[in-house]
Image (cartoon, rainbow, N blue to C red; front, side, top):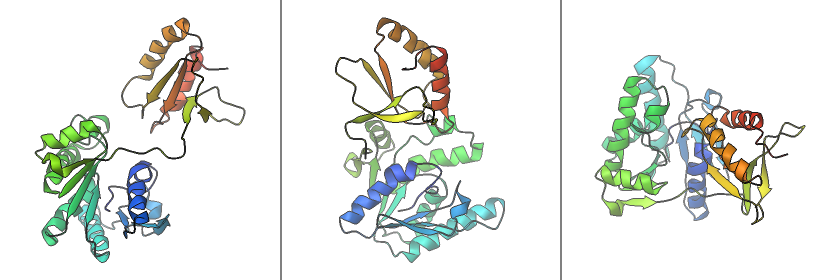
Length: 271
Protein backbone atom coordinates (compact mmCIF):
# COMPACT_ATOMS: atom_id res chain seq x y z
CA UNK A 1 0.00 0.00 0.00
CA UNK A 2 1.38 3.36 -1.07
CA UNK A 3 0.43 6.40 1.03
CA UNK A 4 0.42 10.10 0.04
CA UNK A 5 1.82 11.30 3.38
CA UNK A 6 2.91 9.99 6.77
CA UNK A 7 0.98 8.30 9.55
CA UNK A 8 0.80 11.60 11.46
CA UNK A 9 -0.10 14.35 12.23
CA UNK A 10 -3.13 13.81 9.98
CA UNK A 11 -5.40 10.95 11.03
CA UNK A 12 -6.36 9.95 7.49
CA UNK A 13 -4.08 6.93 7.29
CA UNK A 14 -5.00 5.66 10.75
CA UNK A 15 -8.71 6.18 10.05
CA UNK A 16 -8.93 4.46 6.65
CA UNK A 17 -5.74 3.07 5.14
CA UNK A 18 -4.41 1.30 8.23
CA UNK A 19 -7.76 -0.35 9.12
CA UNK A 20 -8.03 -1.66 5.53
CA UNK A 21 -4.49 -3.03 5.77
CA UNK A 22 -5.14 -4.61 9.17
CA UNK A 23 -8.36 -6.24 7.94
CA UNK A 24 -6.46 -7.77 5.02
CA UNK A 25 -3.70 -8.90 7.38
CA UNK A 26 -6.23 -10.66 9.63
CA UNK A 27 -7.42 -12.55 6.55
CA UNK A 28 -3.93 -13.92 6.04
CA UNK A 29 -2.51 -11.45 3.52
CA UNK A 30 0.93 -9.87 3.89
CA UNK A 31 0.40 -6.11 3.80
CA UNK A 32 2.94 -3.29 4.06
CA UNK A 33 2.45 0.49 3.92
CA UNK A 34 5.06 2.76 2.32
CA UNK A 35 4.74 6.49 3.06
CA UNK A 36 6.73 9.65 2.34
CA UNK A 37 7.39 11.61 5.56
CA UNK A 38 5.31 14.57 4.44
CA UNK A 39 4.41 16.68 7.52
CA UNK A 40 6.22 14.22 9.83
CA UNK A 41 9.94 14.49 9.01
CA UNK A 42 10.76 13.07 12.45
CA UNK A 43 9.58 9.66 11.16
CA UNK A 44 11.82 9.65 8.07
CA UNK A 45 13.55 6.31 7.68
CA UNK A 46 11.47 4.63 10.40
CA UNK A 47 9.67 1.30 10.16
CA UNK A 48 6.96 0.66 12.75
CA UNK A 49 4.45 -2.17 13.05
CA UNK A 50 0.80 -1.42 13.84
CA UNK A 51 -1.19 -4.54 14.73
CA UNK A 52 0.70 -6.70 12.27
CA UNK A 53 1.08 -4.08 9.51
CA UNK A 54 4.54 -2.53 9.00
CA UNK A 55 4.55 1.15 8.06
CA UNK A 56 7.79 2.36 6.44
CA UNK A 57 8.52 6.06 6.00
CA UNK A 58 11.06 6.84 3.31
CA UNK A 59 14.02 9.09 3.99
CA UNK A 60 13.88 12.83 3.45
CA UNK A 61 15.21 14.11 0.13
CA UNK A 62 18.59 15.82 0.34
CA UNK A 63 18.16 17.90 -2.81
CA UNK A 64 16.04 21.08 -3.19
CA UNK A 65 13.16 21.79 -5.56
CA UNK A 66 12.24 19.46 -8.43
CA UNK A 67 15.35 17.36 -7.83
CA UNK A 68 14.08 16.66 -4.31
CA UNK A 69 10.69 15.64 -5.70
CA UNK A 70 12.39 13.19 -8.06
CA UNK A 71 14.48 11.89 -5.16
CA UNK A 72 11.38 11.29 -3.03
CA UNK A 73 9.62 9.46 -5.84
CA UNK A 74 12.72 7.30 -6.38
CA UNK A 75 12.78 6.44 -2.67
CA UNK A 76 9.14 5.36 -2.82
CA UNK A 77 9.81 3.23 -5.91
CA UNK A 78 12.74 1.45 -4.28
CA UNK A 79 10.79 0.79 -1.09
CA UNK A 80 7.80 -0.62 -3.00
CA UNK A 81 9.90 -2.84 -5.27
CA UNK A 82 11.81 -4.17 -2.24
CA UNK A 83 8.50 -5.60 -0.95
CA UNK A 84 8.03 -7.57 -4.21
CA UNK A 85 4.27 -6.92 -4.18
CA UNK A 86 1.59 -8.93 -5.98
CA UNK A 87 -0.81 -5.97 -5.83
CA UNK A 88 -0.16 -2.25 -5.43
CA UNK A 89 -2.81 -0.31 -3.51
CA UNK A 90 -2.56 3.47 -3.95
CA UNK A 91 -4.25 5.41 -1.15
CA UNK A 92 -5.33 8.78 -2.59
CA UNK A 93 -4.52 9.41 -6.28
CA UNK A 94 -2.28 12.41 -5.66
CA UNK A 95 1.16 13.69 -4.80
CA UNK A 96 4.45 11.81 -4.58
CA UNK A 97 2.77 8.42 -4.23
CA UNK A 98 0.57 9.07 -7.27
CA UNK A 99 3.64 9.84 -9.38
CA UNK A 100 5.43 6.76 -8.01
CA UNK A 101 2.42 4.58 -8.88
CA UNK A 102 2.40 6.02 -12.41
CA UNK A 103 6.06 5.09 -12.87
CA UNK A 104 5.42 1.64 -11.46
CA UNK A 105 2.83 1.12 -14.20
CA UNK A 106 5.70 1.65 -16.65
CA UNK A 107 8.27 -0.44 -14.79
CA UNK A 108 5.90 -3.28 -13.91
CA UNK A 109 2.88 -3.01 -16.24
CA UNK A 110 1.52 -6.41 -15.10
CA UNK A 111 1.39 -5.35 -11.44
CA UNK A 112 -2.32 -4.81 -10.63
CA UNK A 113 -3.07 -1.32 -9.35
CA UNK A 114 -5.92 -0.61 -6.93
CA UNK A 115 -6.69 3.07 -6.28
CA UNK A 116 -8.56 4.22 -3.19
CA UNK A 117 -10.29 7.60 -3.15
CA UNK A 118 -11.61 8.82 0.18
CA UNK A 119 -11.94 12.50 -0.73
CA UNK A 120 -12.59 14.89 -3.56
CA UNK A 121 -8.99 15.95 -4.25
CA UNK A 122 -9.03 18.24 -7.29
CA UNK A 123 -11.17 21.18 -8.45
CA UNK A 124 -14.33 21.41 -6.38
CA UNK A 125 -12.59 19.58 -3.53
CA UNK A 126 -9.38 20.07 -1.54
CA UNK A 127 -7.85 22.15 -4.35
CA UNK A 128 -10.39 24.84 -3.51
CA UNK A 129 -9.79 24.64 0.24
CA UNK A 130 -6.03 24.38 0.71
CA UNK A 131 -3.38 26.90 -0.43
CA UNK A 132 -1.47 24.56 -2.73
CA UNK A 133 0.69 26.23 -5.41
CA UNK A 134 -1.08 26.42 -8.76
CA UNK A 135 1.19 23.77 -10.39
CA UNK A 136 0.45 21.35 -7.54
CA UNK A 137 -3.30 21.93 -7.90
CA UNK A 138 -3.10 21.24 -11.60
CA UNK A 139 -1.15 18.04 -10.94
CA UNK A 140 -3.58 16.83 -8.26
CA UNK A 141 -6.60 17.46 -10.49
CA UNK A 142 -4.98 15.50 -13.32
CA UNK A 143 -3.93 12.65 -11.01
CA UNK A 144 -7.44 12.36 -9.58
CA UNK A 145 -8.86 11.78 -13.06
CA UNK A 146 -6.03 9.81 -14.65
CA UNK A 147 -4.92 7.26 -12.06
CA UNK A 148 -8.34 5.62 -11.50
CA UNK A 149 -8.55 5.00 -15.27
CA UNK A 150 -5.27 3.07 -15.08
CA UNK A 151 -6.38 0.92 -12.15
CA UNK A 152 -7.68 -2.62 -12.18
CA UNK A 153 -10.07 -1.59 -9.39
CA UNK A 154 -11.05 1.55 -7.52
CA UNK A 155 -12.39 1.68 -3.96
CA UNK A 156 -14.39 4.71 -2.85
CA UNK A 157 -15.52 5.97 0.56
CA UNK A 158 -18.88 7.41 -0.53
CA UNK A 159 -21.57 7.17 -3.18
CA UNK A 160 -20.68 10.69 -4.35
CA UNK A 161 -17.09 9.59 -4.99
CA UNK A 162 -18.43 6.48 -6.70
CA UNK A 163 -20.40 8.64 -9.14
CA UNK A 164 -17.38 10.90 -9.61
CA UNK A 165 -15.13 7.97 -10.57
CA UNK A 166 -17.79 6.67 -12.97
CA UNK A 167 -17.72 10.13 -14.52
CA UNK A 168 -13.98 9.74 -15.13
CA UNK A 169 -14.82 6.85 -17.44
CA UNK A 170 -14.04 3.98 -15.06
CA UNK A 171 -16.42 1.04 -15.70
CA UNK A 172 -18.91 0.65 -12.81
CA UNK A 173 -17.91 -2.99 -12.32
CA UNK A 174 -14.39 -1.81 -11.46
CA UNK A 175 -15.57 0.57 -8.70
CA UNK A 176 -16.23 -0.75 -5.20
CA UNK A 177 -17.98 1.14 -2.41
CA UNK A 178 -16.01 0.66 0.83
CA UNK A 179 -17.35 3.12 3.42
CA UNK A 180 -15.35 4.19 6.45
CA UNK A 181 -16.02 2.15 9.56
CA UNK A 182 -16.51 3.35 13.11
CA UNK A 183 -14.46 1.68 15.82
CA UNK A 184 -14.68 1.94 19.57
CA UNK A 185 -17.75 4.19 19.96
CA UNK A 186 -20.60 1.73 19.54
CA UNK A 187 -23.79 3.02 21.16
CA UNK A 188 -22.11 6.34 21.86
CA UNK A 189 -21.76 9.75 20.27
CA UNK A 190 -19.37 12.65 20.62
CA UNK A 191 -20.91 15.60 22.41
CA UNK A 192 -19.77 19.18 22.75
CA UNK A 193 -20.18 20.16 26.37
CA UNK A 194 -18.96 22.77 28.80
CA UNK A 195 -15.23 22.25 29.48
CA UNK A 196 -14.40 20.66 32.84
CA UNK A 197 -11.65 21.85 35.17
CA UNK A 198 -9.32 19.37 33.46
CA UNK A 199 -9.83 21.25 30.20
CA UNK A 200 -11.65 18.42 28.41
CA UNK A 201 -13.73 19.85 25.59
CA UNK A 202 -15.11 16.68 24.02
CA UNK A 203 -16.35 13.52 25.68
CA UNK A 204 -18.03 10.30 24.67
CA UNK A 205 -21.59 10.38 25.95
CA UNK A 206 -24.19 7.62 25.99
CA UNK A 207 -27.06 7.97 23.57
CA UNK A 208 -29.44 10.71 24.59
CA UNK A 209 -32.84 9.63 25.88
CA UNK A 210 -35.52 9.32 23.22
CA UNK A 211 -37.26 12.35 24.71
CA UNK A 212 -34.24 14.57 24.08
CA UNK A 213 -34.08 16.28 20.71
CA UNK A 214 -30.63 15.75 19.22
CA UNK A 215 -28.92 17.10 16.10
CA UNK A 216 -26.03 15.06 14.74
CA UNK A 217 -23.28 17.02 12.97
CA UNK A 218 -20.68 14.86 11.19
CA UNK A 219 -18.02 17.23 9.97
CA UNK A 220 -14.38 18.28 9.65
CA UNK A 221 -15.53 21.94 9.81
CA UNK A 222 -14.67 22.75 6.19
CA UNK A 223 -18.23 22.95 4.92
CA UNK A 224 -19.64 26.04 6.65
CA UNK A 225 -18.91 29.16 8.67
CA UNK A 226 -19.11 28.45 12.42
CA UNK A 227 -21.01 31.68 13.02
CA UNK A 228 -23.72 30.54 10.61
CA UNK A 229 -23.98 27.24 12.50
CA UNK A 230 -24.38 28.99 15.87
CA UNK A 231 -26.89 31.44 14.39
CA UNK A 232 -28.97 28.50 13.14
CA UNK A 233 -28.83 26.81 16.56
CA UNK A 234 -30.09 29.84 18.51
CA UNK A 235 -33.75 29.68 17.33
CA UNK A 236 -33.70 25.86 17.59
CA UNK A 237 -32.69 26.00 21.25
CA UNK A 238 -35.16 28.82 21.89
CA UNK A 239 -37.99 26.63 20.60
CA UNK A 240 -36.68 23.42 22.18
CA UNK A 241 -34.48 24.09 25.23
CA UNK A 242 -33.62 20.39 25.62
CA UNK A 243 -32.04 20.25 22.14
CA UNK A 244 -28.45 19.06 22.01
CA UNK A 245 -25.87 19.21 19.22
CA UNK A 246 -23.84 16.00 18.91
CA UNK A 247 -20.63 16.55 16.94
CA UNK A 248 -18.65 13.74 15.33
CA UNK A 249 -15.37 15.01 13.94
CA UNK A 250 -12.68 17.55 14.63
CA UNK A 251 -11.20 20.35 12.59
CA UNK A 252 -7.63 20.55 11.37
CA UNK A 253 -7.26 24.08 12.74
CA UNK A 254 -8.95 23.83 16.14
CA UNK A 255 -12.39 24.78 14.84
CA UNK A 256 -14.05 22.74 17.59
CA UNK A 257 -12.60 25.11 20.22
CA UNK A 258 -13.90 28.12 18.32
CA UNK A 259 -17.32 26.47 18.12
CA UNK A 260 -17.27 26.05 21.91
CA UNK A 261 -16.38 29.70 22.36
CA UNK A 262 -19.14 30.90 20.05
CA UNK A 263 -21.66 28.55 21.64
CA UNK A 264 -20.75 29.81 25.11
CA UNK A 265 -21.12 33.42 23.96
CA UNK A 266 -24.59 32.58 22.61
CA UNK A 267 -25.49 30.77 25.88
CA UNK A 268 -25.89 27.46 24.06
CA UNK A 269 -23.56 25.26 26.12
CA UNK A 270 -25.03 22.51 28.24
CA UNK A 271 -24.48 23.12 31.93
